[in-house]
Length: 518
Image: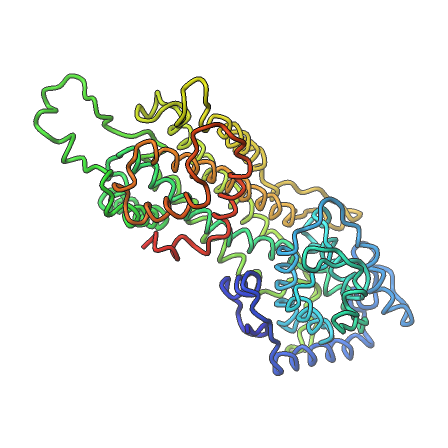
C-alpha cells in the first residue's frame, strides 16, 4: 500500500499504483489536515468575497453569487465544462489523472471536504475510471474540460469504464456501494482547476519513454554488433572527454551490452596493423555511418531530456496546482495561477522532440540493415527467401518510414501555440494536455518503429548464423524475442507479428530486469 498525503510521491510510487495496482491509503493525520483546511475556508469565506466561492468563474468573476446559489454554482461549473470530444482516454491514462489529482488535493491547500479525496481513493483502488475525452482544456486554468468529466463522475453522473466496458456511473457506484459526492463549498472548482490531466499523462509518457530509451540503446548495440563495428566510438576514453552525463551513460550501457561479444572489433587489431600502411584502398570501412557511430551523441541528449522531464513532472505531481490556494496555516486565501500548465507543456514538447529524434535514429539504422549497398553484408531487405520472388522486410520498411514522418510532423511544439479564449481572460495558455497527448502518440509510434527494427535484427542474426557470437546480453534478447516472432522465409502478413513484438517490448518490465544492461 502507498500513502498519499503530505509525503512526496516518487515516479516509482506513481508507477506502482498505476501499473502494479498497489492500493492507495490516506493516513488519518493527513485527512485531518484536509478537514482543517476545509473548515478554515468555510469560515473564512462566510463574510468575504472569494473567487469561485461566491463569485462567478473566469471573466464572470465580477458577478456576485447569492448565498442560496453557492452550491449550485459548483454543479453548474461541472455541467457546463463537461464538453469533451474526440476519443476516450485509455483507462490507464485516466487512472494516472486521478492519482495526480488526489495527490494535489491531499496537500490540503484546496479547501475541499474529505469526501472528495476518499471518493477518489475508492475509484483508484477499484480501477473505476471516468469516461474522459481527449479534446478539451487548453491547459491554462488547468485541464478544465478533462477534469470536468472527472467531476461529473464524482457527483454520480456521466459514465465510467470498468474491466474494458462502459457503464452509467450510478450503476457501478451502486454495485460497489459508493456514495456520490455532495458539494460542500468549492469541490467543483477544486476538482477542475488543476494540471492533473497533463501531469498524469505526462508521467505515463516518462515511464514509457524510459523503457523506449533502453530498447533504443539495445537495438543500436545489436545493430553495431551484427555489422561487426569497431568498439572505440562507445569507449570510455572517447566519451569521457565530452562532459555530458547522458552521453557517458549511453556509452556505459553499450559497453555493458557488448562486453563479451565475439563480433565487435577492436580497431588496433585490424586497422592499426602494418600491412594497412601499404594499401591505397582499405577494404574495411574506417569509420561507420553516423547512425552506428554517433549513438552516444544522439541518444545522450534524449537520455538527459527524459531525466529532466521526470524531475519537472514529479515536482508538478507533488505541487498544489489550483486557484485560489487556501492557506489555513497563514489564515489567508491567495489568488494566482498555479493551474497554468507551462512547466508540463514545455517538458512534453521537449520530450516529444527528443523521442522523435530517437525514432529517426532507429529508422536510419533500419535502412542501413535493409540496404545491401550500404551494409555490404546482408541480402536486400534481409530477405531470407528467393530474391525477386520474396520480399523479406521490404513492406515493413514503409510502415517505419511513414510512422517516423508522422512523428516529425507532430514535433511542432504546443508550448508556443497559445490561442486566447474565455473572453480573453485566458489570453495566454499552455496547451499542456494537448502536448502530453501528442507526446504519447509519438512514443507509441516510436515503439512501432523500434519493433520493426528488432524484427529485422532477428532476421539478420539468422541470416548470418551468428547466434553463438552474440554477447550474453544480446543473445538473451534474441532468444526471448524469437519465441515471440519466429524466423520467416516465405512471405506472409506481418501486421500481427508487429503487434506481438511491439506489445512484448512495451510490456517488458525493464531491459535491466533481463540482466541486459549492467
